[in-house]
Length: 146
Image (cartoon, rainbow, N blue to C red; front, side, top):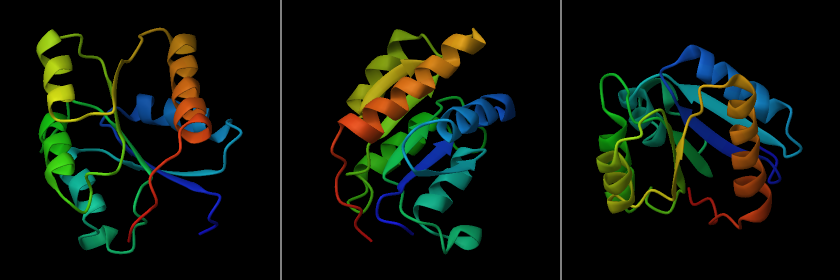
């Protein structure tokens, strides 16, 4: 892996949202490797490098949907932020949920930010582009510890 490449993990069960996010990141200016998993259990396996993900790179950033099958995104976030090996990875919540309880719980579990997915396609691409621009160009990410 090139040290200038940012590793991003997208945990998203909507194939269309995953595809749009991939397109937005592909069109971006920053070299990144965007990996996609479709449920919370896969996301945790990826993060812990288990099973099919034994050779996975540690992500520099996680984009996490809350409403996931198998293991809910709220639980995935809680597990990431309570695991000493993973807790330094920034987690951006990217979800359709507008529930105040979800916002409060996400920050209680130490999400780095909470973004509601817009339903409008152009706005969705704008949001993903803004995430990429901020998190991959403005922010200094923590060193990628093995």
